[in-house]
Amino acid sequence: MKILCIDTSSVLCGISILNDNNLIKKVELNNGLTHSETLMPLLKQLLEECKLTLNDIDLLVCDIGPGSFTGIRIGIATVKAFSDSLSIPCIGISSLEVLAYNIKDDGLICSTIDCKNDNCYFALYELNNGIYKIIEEPRADTVKNILDFLENKYSKQIIHFVGDGLTEKSTNNTLSVENLGIAGFRKYQTTYKQSEEILPLYLKKPQAQRQLEEKLKGCVK
Image 1 (tube, rainbow, N blue to C red):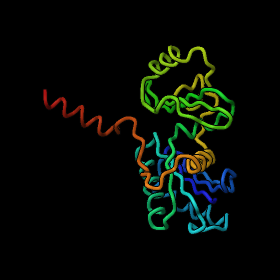
Image 2: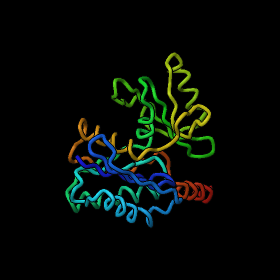
Image 3: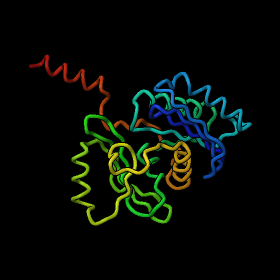
Image 4: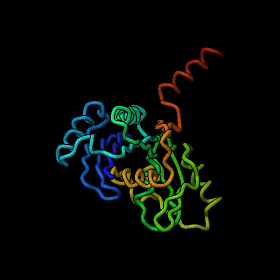
């Protein structure tokens, strides 16, 4: 199965092509949040280098966040357009789950992504014999609350930390577009439903919306 993966959830624009679990080729560009300009040229370059076209792709996988609100929308819109026009199945995977795939040792995995002001996105997974299982669903909270929660509930278990939300504990902070494909392929094999809709994973409101709400509150007083 040929799998095309797109990750535009951060400043890094990443695209990979896999054959099942095996990476064929990937290309990544750290050019800031300019994905609307760089995504399609990168995709064209990668397909040409692999001597493939979109008609050769059997599965589309997209990072649905959390991350850059604009970047996530660009990635999802692109994947949906390809899926609708070419009737290719598509799957969305959380950035936090992609991070968890950086860890290969059995046990608990705490994935975090910094969302500023001592807050982070958080999810907890368990890896057992190659299977990643969600233990605590993704959410946004303060760093202190997350650390207190883990100490109170999982203090007797070894936890592997990954991501940039708790940098003093994490060992691997990189979102891998290759792991995005591996996670997508496993989901396709196990829990994929044809009617499944890819939606952005927004764990907190965009800054502009929060600022507007604060402004409106001030007008009401």
